[in-house]
Image (cartoon, rainbow, N blue to C red; front, top):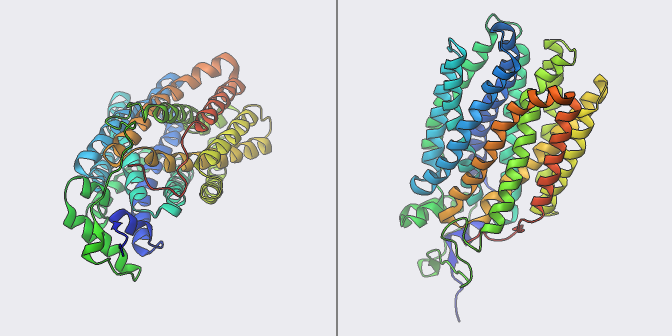
Length: 443
């Protein structure tokens, strides 16, 4: 009689969601929320800078875009470093980098200084996101992996809501309020210590580096919390990698992976173009349409709140419909909402269309972060998700710069028709991705 052998991955997959999973989710999620808060704050800071420093729309667009230049570089480097140094180590470093740089941004004395500091902030922000999602994905049991990663991405909404509230309560009401708002961004630097010493390293990463004793200890800690005993030593095996002869995974562009890489990059590019083009400029566009600064910030808070139910619905559907169908559906909904927002001609219509755009767009982001880590083997997972994020950040750079140009060509309707078209292209690309619902992470 042969006893079935269990890998450490099998043992993690059999576990129920326990308090260690929750600690990892919340610990990573808080870093994610701080990231979102920093990105969101710049949209409110832009409105204040336009008045205080008399900046033109073109200059403001550079304040918004330069951070995404850093994010593109950071995402690529962060993914590579995560595969070399470990997920937890790189996660902590990125928090430290962008926390210190954000705090320093509050002291910026000129437009040039602010742009340089925002670039450094972007390096840290860009590197963090793919690393955090990879770490959480590698610990989550496969039957709920997508749902857990969407829950992680939902912390983005919490951070963006915090940014909206800071923008609404602090920036208009204090002298140099934008500086005080940015000063809050130093919090991630302190939180980096919590990540470094409070969160576990990926079991898959530890095994890939031959650190089997550490990997075994990590798995046992999760089993003990769930009241499960580790299998006896004769039933524990190292990770065995089975590759079909026709599946070459030396790089993300190998024959077996290049199709999914292209589709993933297209989705990342289009969703970045539309999301950051719309939401970074949202308060400024509302002011441009005739609303006061305070009212514009108030409407932005309301629209931002719709992100939370978007994540909740996506988290449920992703394990019911699957990754592909959920991602494509939310992208299609984003396209419809973007078109409606472009032609909204009343406060009620702006709020309804804006809330719909928040709901569908952020639900799509949640599904996208769940999909990425599933597409690549452990040795390429950080690099694959980081490269896709880096390519997407190119669109994030272009988006804020393109808004003033599109506004000059045809106003708000033209801006949001372009964004709607990008969402349609992304929905089509999403349907070309492989489906990994309730399946092992690719090896």
